[in-house]
Image (cartoon, rainbow, N blue to C red; front, side):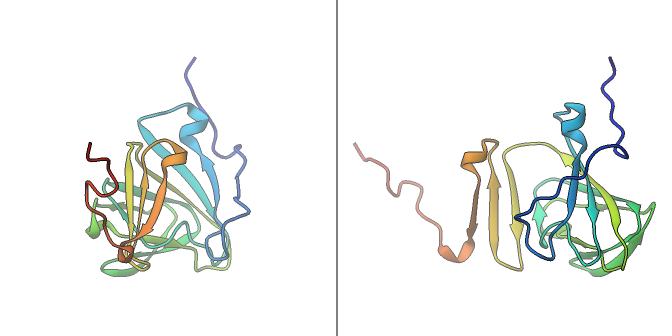
Length: 158
């Protein structure tokens, strides 16, 4: 049977631990289809909410506005995208972005990228780096200011 899902009928999941400003609901299309090669999610953005903080990754990421309008911050500035408009965020610092609903009604966007792991995201505003190796217990978020450690630091020399 052909795996399929209707995102219009899927339940939007909200994480109650998300802070104000980042309370976006999610429909995980990849999970609904059992897909592994692409990470595809639909985000429902109430007024004044963002998908996530300003960041970049080391893979290309795409955005499609499904309903409403969103402000997209990039290194070049901010631009409002409306229903039907598409954006592509390059890998690395040139692809830094933040998607925010600045309107007074909800918006929906679809974002997709490869589902490669490990994944790394850099957050320039807060000088953080997040690493997702694939095992949820190994995920780490750290600030660059905390300093790097040497490759052999803490290792047994015997």
